[in-house]
Image (cartoon, rainbow, N blue to C red; front, side, top):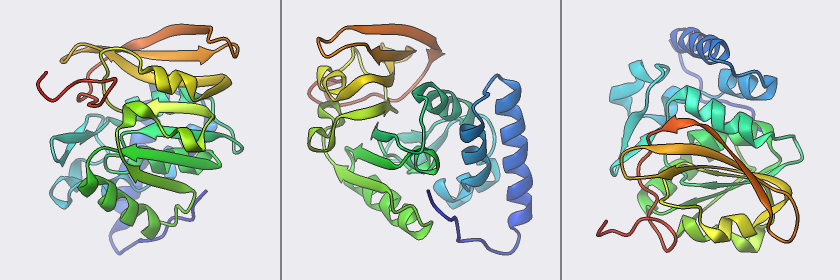
Length: 227
């Protein structure tokens, strides 16, 4: 867990906006106190482009460059709550993006491993996370649909881009009892799924957390560039 620094004069307005954001996601049904505390602490405005900082705490996604987005706060909270994390959890994130979701995870879990396809986003996120004191986040550039098998298995895996189907390597890298949260569906709308690994033989339970819209997950077990 991090001790967030990087505070400057004028942060009071961001503090108030962040509290309003937390009040909103609580009103929409998020109950996990660890998730709410993390969302109240992480300075989301530092994870968006400077030109969009006034919108950082609004409940909608924002562009972060390279055709990618930072998810709306409610979706970040919903996916994080579905992972059922504890301070001992080891988590894999697919799609580092801005680094905001990784920061939320790092406030709760013991270790966070994150895979990003785009080197420029990975470098920017890693730099900011280090500046903010998140030393329990490890980032590498690669095909997220392959996971990060060398560091597995994981208690939770969260995928922040949409796949046409669930990548088999991610299921394989779950601990028994582990949770995978992933948007699955077409290019323009998906269903957010929570998958729980029930036993070593590969039996799982799956249920829907609702409809959603994410950017595409590219890779061997995701979308192909020509799609």
